[in-house]
Image (cartoon, rainbow, N blue to C red; front, side, top):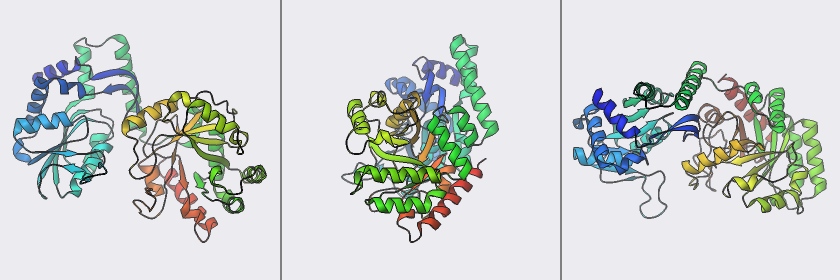
Length: 455
């Protein structure tokens, strides 16, 4: 034990633990951020870490080594050299050319692979790697994590039937650092806050209700959306990707009682007019749902401002909510001069197959979203901070992986159980059906049940 402690004190001095306010890859918010990548610059410490791993998992147990991309790759490479066991490399996504393989290296079906993760929080990224490795016919008997944040990841992995060990647990190392006087008062306070929040979450182990979210979200349009949701018992938003105004109005009349929001694209409507918008606005008031303009603003701030307030659409005059991309950075949504009753939904992560946004981009997008008071929520395929409403597109009852246009589909239950969604967005499954009213009721019922079953 003393050997492990001495090793951790050495790597701590590299700055692997940072204190502040961070959004993790899992979407969780934390006062602690652990980053093992600085070890890659210290071969002596990489070798020592490899020896500690081999002490926990004898090399006779496995025939291949793989690190969860990307932080664990230097650790896995060093372990391969140290043990003389072949390394395979897991990509985050296929490269789109050449072999398009997700797993690189030389291997045979049926071989045992040791999987290495640097830090485990929820275990989601680890499980994605497991799935891709097992698709190649390889067997995973042993998984080792360098550090467990003790936020449910280990339990999540074990529930799936995998054997996982960890070298360090966050509670143990923080106590050790405090005992050795490595921490100042502010850092100790942040640690105490981290454990209080973690323990509270472990006790509750349930998602926040809409009522609870309403208490911590301040924007009036977000509160209005939640009020509509609770009164009508629907978290369903329908995406009306239609090109004729009369078809949109017909759909709105048919399904308006079953939805909390209707999402449109004004720039695809052939016969757009402000009179059409007035009719649609009246329907939304009568049937009590909000209007979403899915413009996905994606330019510098001035251009975004002009697109909102000028042109034939004059979006700021009628939309309750508008969607925005954040590729241009936080300043692109700072000075849009939108009405107080209008909210922004950021696009942190799309549902399309082969999307280019990586975890680093998504973390940055979520951080920008949290800091802008006009943002009521975000579109993502993962759990996010409870101060944001989470909107999940690509919802379909059928188990499609992707359609002709490259969209991934997921079931309403999965959206709530796995992603922690607040609102589901359904398009073609409803407006292309023979009876949109009946289909809307099916999705309304499924979404509401998926939500209430988690309370």
